[in-house]
Length: 212
Ligand code: DC
Image (cartoon, rainbow, N blue to C red; front, side, top):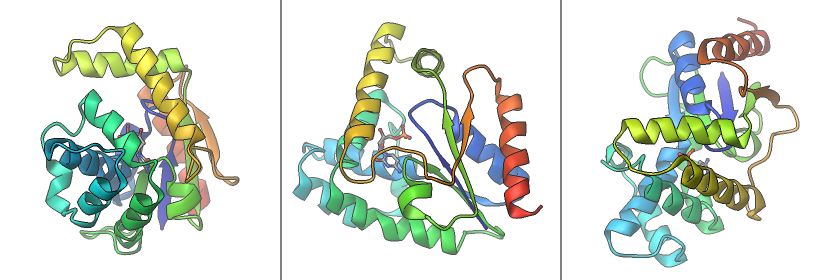
């Protein structure tokens, strides 16, 4: 049983995916962490994440423990991840890891929840329950700014909004696996919902689709 949760940056998909996985007893994979880990490894090696050779080498050498590196959630890492994610060969190299997780969820999981940009369109197109989570850009920027401020990053809300629009543009306009809802995805706009209300809506949809 596979649940996919896709959407733009800071729409709330990570939190929703984690809570759904906990609630259902499924394993959870935040696929953004894979792209972030590759981007961060390239940055740390002094390379350019937009450089295909450098990113492909890092993608092929990716180890599960890389998904626990410090600095994965930093704003600069997010940009590196977005650059890495625009390279078709790198995306292809990272597909197996994601599909393998979905097919054989680690632990005693009866299923898997994958969140990202293309979990429902490319990674698991046959998943029975697909969510596309979104929210207005200003709302997402505010949430993201709160999260960054809490972690001590000094950045203005206006800068976060500008970064977010730029990342949305890159993620949406790229030719390979662009950010878009799967045709059979359920759209969930969390702009005016708190996390509990968003979770209830997501849970009801997923339970219906999985026959739980
Ligand atoms: O979800 P996130 O903010 O952690 O993702 C960071 C970047 O990684 C995002 O801007 C684009 C890229 N990404 C991707 O290309 N495909 C995914 N499935 C997940 C993330």
